[in-house]
Amino acid sequence: MTRLDPIIAVKKVEESAKWYCKIFGFNRAHGGDHFAVLTTKDNEIVLCLHAWETDNHPSMTNPNITPGNGLLLYFRTADWKEIKQNLDKIGWTIEKDIQQNVNSLKQEFSFRDPDGYFITATEFHTYEG
Image (tube, rainbow, N blue to C red):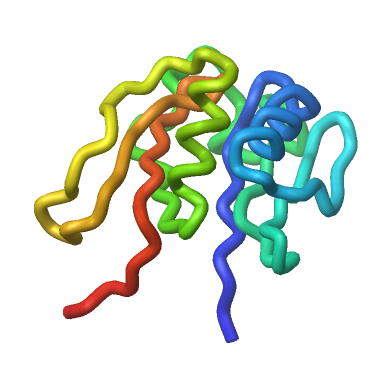
């Protein structure tokens, strides 16, 4: 079995972890000041947050670069409407409002996290190919 644990560099791990938990309903399974593991309600790791400039990871040494260049966090989730409501409750900026994706034919919307990472939340679907 293979699992992917995506890790993104953030300025403030604690604040980012709280934001992701509030918006997505994730749980914080592990963490400290410089690292957090976020899980789904089913205890599956979905995202890890890592402080810039710690542990000498080569791609996390310069916090002045544009976060997320070449990266899109794409969440396929049954909770997409709840996520949108959570964002609306706190007045969060939506980059692209709810629209139908012409490829998946599913509803989706896009926004940025507190560090500027671009996120798309879409109706859960399986890939057919």
